[in-house]
Length: 493
Image (cartoon, rainbow, N blue to C red; front, side, top):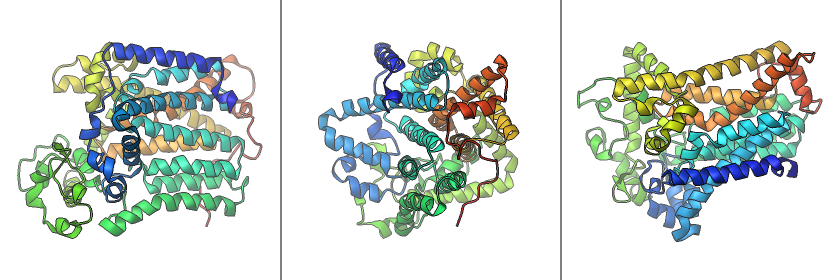
């Protein structure tokens, strides 16, 4: 472990991190604690402080982990909670940088590229701004990177101990972010079992796999039993409708789609029967019944949003049947937004403007200089082009090399599967937020980028032999797991 953490490059990264964060504070970018009171995903602050476990248990809108973290910090920190949140988020950014460094070192990337890729993430405008926003984006990156780090260890040392360690970040990930659905988790675990089937007896592998599925599935079952929904978030109908009805001009007030999703619950009174209020009264009235939380913020955990979300889902399905081309146009637009700079995320724009020149150079984010809706759209589309091309080139190059050599590593399968899943899910079900979803997985893409650079460099140097094969050999992996034929993963019974 010391070889991963301690070294001259570690101290360089630490110094650059500290100096860059001092500079960022000098330009006026500060930690935003007020998000705790306003963001939809968080429970009432009084609940977090004094009724945490009950509040989380009856939260139908969000998985439990991040609210548990918020409540724990509030209870431990007291009046120092804002400082603790600030240190926590910055610590996560630096931990993510070290994890990128550790992964790249483990897979044999040259030192100069390890340092360059690590700095690329650390000094990203997105990283800098998001660590000053009390949100879970970089925390999700931490869990994804931890999973990749452990998958690299499993690739090099396919032991049952490493598999058990992997269960922790995967379980926390699925219980922190509803995007990472239990079906995604099942595919990931099935793929891992298939890759490891010759190195570890399947009967032993199935124990940690089933523990992971039971841990995550128990929250789904809790919501099914209490609320009637096998999900970690009952907002899917509202999320989906934002993409389906984007730019549509529906003014008939008798139709729910004429109202902005996630509006105050009083907006939807004509669509609410009142049965849910009567059914759930007395369980957790502080969080399930009020229209507002913290006196002024919309309480999206109100029990009636379940019915509202269902109504939006019904309207969305009906609209897609009658306007399939219009919906597909919105999906394409969301797919483009996926590759735009994360600093264009609406809740980050105020901070992003304080470093707009740096963001323009680093991310080609020209939207900060645009005026008017059409100009901003054009600027955003232009800013998405470099990322889109880079992703296509790296994915095509590495996938082509893998198929040509008939070998690919478990951690690369995980990275490609995860990025592909996030892209598709966010493009079909979200609108104007999925650039943040991409940024959560950006550190994983940087691992692929480093490999593509190294392999291309080896080919250009003409050192002989196949570059991909040589790349796997340089990792010094276990002979049991070095090369795995590309066959469809089939979960064992």
